Length: 151
Image 1 (cartoon, helix red, strand yellow):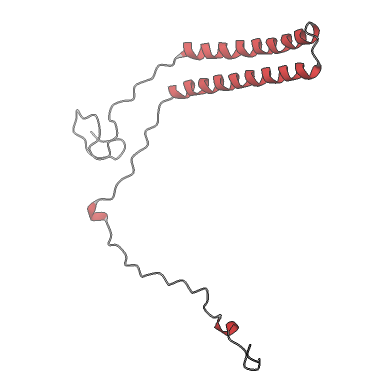
Image 2 (cartoon, rainbow, N blue to C red):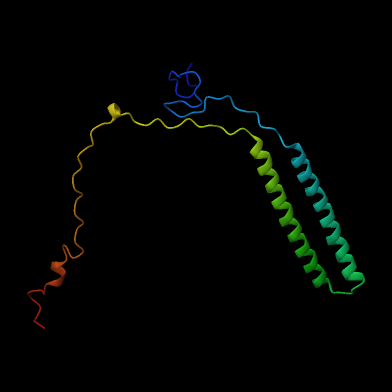
């Protein structure tokens, strides 16, 4: 029997490869939680339709019965839509996590480590060149000219 990841010979009865550590058991089929997915889809639909109904019905009620101005009704609609959108976003996010969790996780093959006989000698490095001074090549500008009278 051979490891499907690294190809080494394996003793029968092992759960993991001795060399690379890959699992030798056949992947277990994960059950799809269709009940939870359907519940999320129903919740997204009902909250979306109900939220829009509350937003529009509340706006009409505030305008007609409470006799509020258009600016207050507009703010009510804006905040209701914002809360509704935020709720829908998080529900869709949870749904995508639920659906993504049912997919089989891919096992990436481990990076082969260097064996002792594969190591190479370290290369000798020289010291880096020193940084030049800030005041280097500036002494000419700091000296007085010979023709200039002393100060």
